[in-house]
Length: 128
Image 1 (tube, rainbow, N blue to C red):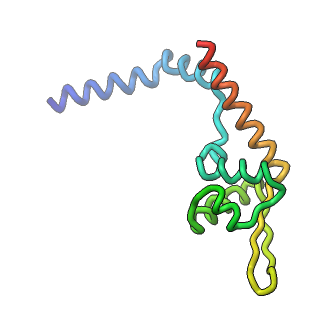
Image 2 (cartoon, rainbow, N blue to C red):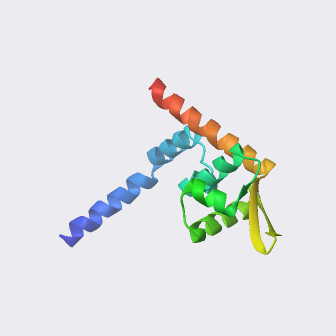
C-alpha cells in the first residue's frame, strides 16, 4: 500500500514538473498577471478604497468605515504605509492624540492598477 502511494506521488510530481506543466504555467502567467497581494487583502482594499474616496481620514473614522478593531487597523495600515501607499500623520487635538491617514499618489496608482486588473478578469470571464 505504501509502495503504491509512493509511486502515485512520484507520477504526480513528474506530471506537475514536466513540459506540459511548464506550457500550462506559461499560458496562465501570460493570461493573468499577478494581483497586487498587498491591496488584494480585504481589509487593506477597504482602507485604500475609503482613502481614495476621502482626502484624509482619522484613525477612528477609518476604523468605523472598515468595521475592524484598533489592532487590525494598525497592522494593516502599517503594511500600506511601509509600501508607500498611505501616509500617517500624528498630532494632538488639544490633549487628545489624532492620527490621520491619506492615500499617496503611489497608493492611488496601485488601486487603479488593481481595479483595472479585476475589470479585465471579469471581462474575460464574461466572454467565455
